[in-house]
Length: 214
Image (cartoon, rainbow, N blue to C red; front, top):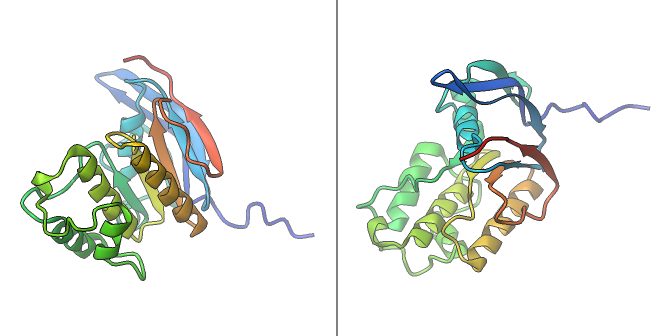
């Protein structure tokens, strides 16, 4: 009988991952993996290193020790640019471009998910009718929704979501959960940080808890 349990490597795997700041440990060593169709929920209080971990995985910070593999191969800048979509605390939008112009610009930089268009993504996140609104005119919640539209348009299979529920009402929280569920059904994976104030998305989930205090 053939064993298919290890037929495909994890979409993301980390081994012995360690990060220090000013000679003080932030996290690690960490060992974890997330498969296609799965979410990893990263929990911990303020100062536990959740944002730092996602920035290390995205290649924005360099770990002190450890290895990161993407789809079974050592992660490099090219792999990360194709495989990872990062949603951080800042909206990463151009303030003087409209919502639609922002999405077209970002699709030009990062590519676009097959059969998805910027206008449809705006409607999906509840920004239909705001196509010509400048990003600087949006509320914090609307900017988060615009960032979610950008995320949805990305062809990257691995989502790194840093506190994705922040600045969203109940409808927005449900929107994030629907997006994550759909992304995983399509073979993607997600790492989601939370300090525990929100429920985990209703999907197949692994847990990673980071210690530390604010």
